[in-house]
Amino acid sequence: MSATERFAGGVAVITGAGSGIGEGLALEAARLGMRVVLADISAERMESVAVAIQQSGGEAFSVPTDVADAEAMTRLARLTHERYGDVRLLINNAGIEVVGFIWDIAPAVWERAFRVNVLGVVHGMQAFVPAMRASTQPAYIANLSSVGGLGMMAQQGPYIASKQAVLSLTECLALELSRVAPHLQVSAVLPGPVTTRIFEDAPIGQDAASVGYHLNVMKGMLAQQGMPARQAASIILEGIAAGDFWVSTHPVLTQQMASARAQYLQQLNRPTLTAEATAILGPP
Image 1 (cartoon, rainbow, N blue to C red):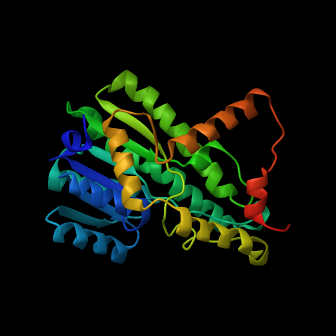
Image 2 (image 1 turned 135 degrees about the horizontal axis):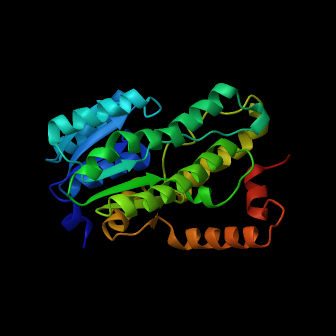
């Protein structure tokens, strides 16, 4: 079944909807005929997306939300149900990047990264899953991990670790719901390079000079080689609609990274930097 057939007329809730992949998902969900609830910490960015949806004839409802705050997510769920009723599609997309050496990143930055990237997903599931489980209608939950969740990278420790955690949480959620709510489908979304603001918005470690090269390379790579967010969003929504657990914007890259990870674990190899990763990091 196509994404249009699966989702048209339903309600979508998308966190981190003010920019990047979240913005693309919101615009694409509206194009499919969904009523879209936008959640983002930036009211200005979110409203811009809402206006774009409305000008295209769609319906959007904006709720300023910090996913790191459990009460804010509970409020988001309450307002959504009061306005629209059952949710057909929940996408826990909000996330932030951090660049720096593990020992140079301030504790507050570490905490913020995990509260947004990991607990933000947990808060989304806790706020929405009970009502989705109680409903008899088929519904869909997708959590945004990353191809980075299948690998490792120096100077991106908070992001890689948090995205591996999101993947593990999503696997556990799929197992749990298969037992108690089989009408709910779970997908783990692993985007590859997509053109977003993630590195522009990324906090960095205290040794800024040492990570500047890495940061600039990643910004340039996404700007020049990244997939447009709308294209990525369309692929993601089609994958969810198809019933896939693993949903990737770059299937070949994802398969390569999964195979490399499997071999690494099977052989209990020592962590090493590939030539490509070394080039991205620049001189030590």
